[in-house]
Length: 210
Ligand code: HEC
Ligand code: HEC
Ligand code: HEC
Ligand code: HEC
Ligand code: HEC
Picture 1 (cartoon, protein in one colour):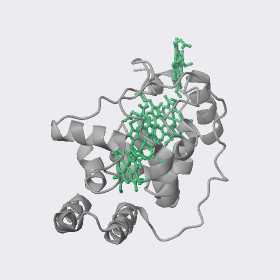
Picture 2 (cartoon, helix red, strand yellow):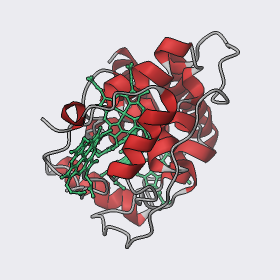
Picture 3 (cartoon, helix red, strand yellow):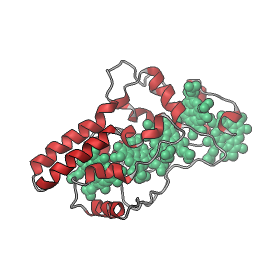
């Protein structure tokens, strides 16, 4: 991705100025701007008011992760778009977990003194990635695809991509407030089928069971 290349370039120069916080902060705003830029589209009037949101909540244990990844700091405080990290959501079945190289684009210089970032850097230096554990997992006999849902609720309706988290929230809740990702929607058959009924999704058994 072009953004990454550019990040790497600026980091080379910044290395020499490691201890200058003003530079770090300036760089940070540029990084965040770069991260968010591709997702900013001309504003549109589309809202989610014409969608009947799916109903149901799920309460369960947190999944222990190798490093606690704080969605709140990244999404809420630093305004990084969900799809900057979960790049595949709009074009494939899976949303995808970002590779460590993407994290290091920022964390080679940001918060390098923090214990969790030191751990992350260790994985990176050992050419490995934190073994993230699955939080959401529908049974194998269920067919689900992100692409179709993002197309239907975002692209097809000119829904502003910078607000995509409102669409993700249908099925994942308010991830932007989470200090650790956890499952808050049931994602069971009733949940899926009801939303299909309310919003014109397919009803045949075989669309979801192949
Ligand atoms: C800076 C990168 C980054 C951003 C931005 C980001 N995520 Fe994540 N996300 C991750 C990482 C890394 C994980 C894996 C760790 C975990 O599950 O806690 C993850 C995990 C998840 C999971 C759980 C995946 C599973 O295993 O089921 C969901 C759901 C999720 N993110 C949704 C979102 C949503 C919605 C947004 C925007 C509100 C978002 N993410 C923004 C990096 C990011
Ligand atoms: C666009 C820049 C950017 C990217 C990409 C990014 N982060 Fe961050 N991250 C930040 C910023 C900014 C902070 C807040 C730093 C601070 O508070 O000093 C942060 C904080 C964190 C923290 C909390 C550190 C602490 O203990 O306070 C963790 C853990 C973290 N990031 C992990 C990750 C992981 C894992 C990835 C890749 C999936 C990632 N980050 C990608 C910018 C980024
Ligand atoms: C219509 C419901 C729905 C919407 C909308 C949705 N997801 Fe998901 N998501 C799921 C389901 C179901 C799973 C579990 C899939 C599985 O187990 O195969 C999942 C899994 C994930 C995962 C972990 C596995 C993977 O696919 O990589 C991430 C990360 C994720 N979603 C992020 C997002 C983000 C980011 C958005 C918004 C851009 C989003 N999701 C929108 C239902 C949804
Ligand atoms: C927010 C409401 C909503 C939720 C929740 C939802 N869907 Fe959908 N889904 C739709 C709509 C609307 C369509 C039709 C999209 C279109 O035709 O463009 C659709 C389409 C689909 C398709 C057809 C994809 C294709 O390639 O033909 C499948 C499969 C599917 N959904 C599975 C699921 C599963 C499984 C779940 C639960 C884990 C789920 N959906 C949850 C609204 C939803
Ligand atoms: C919109 C998607 C969707 C449609 C349409 C759908 N299912 Fe399901 N179905 C699911 C999901 C998701 C699960 C997984 C439930 C879980 O994880 O608890 C499931 C689970 C099941 C199971 C396993 C038992 C259970 O309840 O968990 C059976 C049997 C089943 N479905 C049959 C059917 C039949 C028959 C139809 C047609 C009348 C149908 N399904 C239509 C999404 C769907």
